[in-house]
Amino acid sequence: MKVVPTLEGGLKVELEADHDIEVLEMILTDAGQPEVLSAELAELMEASDDWDELMSPELWEMFYGHLAIVGKAVKAAKELGSLHIEKSSGDAWYSALNQARLRLEREYQLHSKGDLVMEDDVSRNAYIRDRFYCTLQTLLLDFVMGLND
View 1 (cartoon, rainbow, N blue to C red):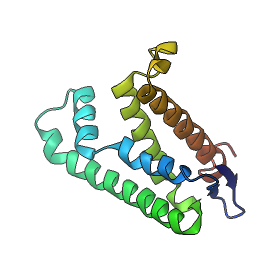
View 2: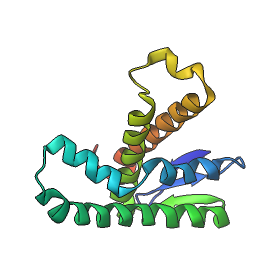
View 3: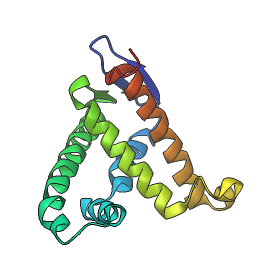
């Protein structure tokens, strides 16, 4: 898989191996469900009962919207042989990748285990996906979202 910036301010991910599309599909799986995100944020905020009524529906809508954008692009990549991340969808991609990384960290404690993360295939694969997601987020910041201009 190669990731290159486009002239239009986006990214193009060129799929080179059969499993590349599977890695991209894992973003959606690793990101999980908005109910989990909402509950985790509520715990951090020590929220009242109003949290579920006021914030959760808005977070769910935003979260599902981001995942829908990512899912549509990944589905198109299957047919095209490459993934295109447009400037207009940079925030959605960053959000989905961030949620995927947060869930991987919560489930596998990737950064607190050190070398222990490499003990089994499942943890090792989660760690590799986390590093890929982090790299893709960095490229989004540098080339799509324009935060380093």
